[in-house]
Image 1: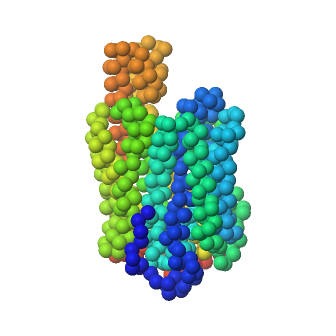
Image 2: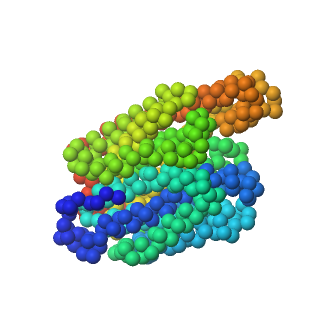
Length: 537
């Protein structure tokens, strides 16, 4: 993390006026570094196991369904508990809840490599890691929001956003490097080590922080939104592969929808709502939710196919695939912290809209890739996308957090994290399903000419086609080329959809974002508190 400027934008007087203790103000950058490290601990788990799945499948004799849930158990539990975890942290202590989450995360991460004997135990440990992650991630942003005075908060949130944006890919990169030298145990121990380092740092450096108004936790609302998010996320994950013929998917969809409707009805009448629905009437809040959701939808759809392109089209091994992502992440890390200065000069509108256009341009570059793209093709296109992400995510996160009273920071951080998770899950499910269906359609003419025992394998996936082609000599080379071409054409279609989504989002922001607004600082407390009055009446 770069050293903050010698002449800070805020003063101790500003901090004291906003209720920030002098000791907290003087070590605010060390606090931010600690919070970002704790954030990385939670983010690493999101994508760290994908590369280890083949080894895990052999070690634990996993079925295909169990392999899926080793990955998805974390995401499902994590996304479902974000609002409840953030509300508990606001009421009972943000530092206390974050440290509890880190402890749970460490124990769960260590259990799998040292004690797990079955696939069920492995899945359970991943679910427990999801609980720990849900207690950590929203709490880090809540603490950033209350530790920094309003003048410096945009820069601090920009750094947090940059770390959150690259965290999942960083976890994948580190895991890939470790798996090159060690076995699957390293994928779990990586998170445990991060957590063990983060725990004492948090205990020593991060101050305790609570909702000074002691707003009660809306337990019924928390239960309803947890069931709603669990049902929605499960449906998003399972519907593309199983459709609605699967009874459990139908039950999840109905339970999720019903719980969401009950949650909305309850929140409109309860005295202290978990989510103030009146905030959606504020343009800063609703537009930030839209931009974050749609941006992550498009971005995760792009990342979905890249691992397969690297390994099955470009011929990279696992460690090369992992390291290849690093340079494309640099624009987000470098540009993100500079965005608040850009907003001060040109305004939120003319930062976010060009950022979305840049994202769309990156996706359009991906539609021009040849059957076997070069690394430079990838680097140019993906760096363009992450540059646009840096321009969008910092203003969007700041707009959302500044729309929520500081004493209810958990509400804002939970909404921010949930929109990221839902957008990412939708992107993977929808665009991943599109890629799979388009590939099957594209390769069908070739598969029909093959023996029955291999045609289905070739149609099912690019990986299957490459495995079959490796055993067929010269004829296999033609099958491999046809499968690669079919997959790349399918990927290009999904990238075109991503470009269109980014373009439509840019148009929405161009029309709806306030003109001339050049501040990312939190809005006056009176305005933010007033936003809660309709729900509290």
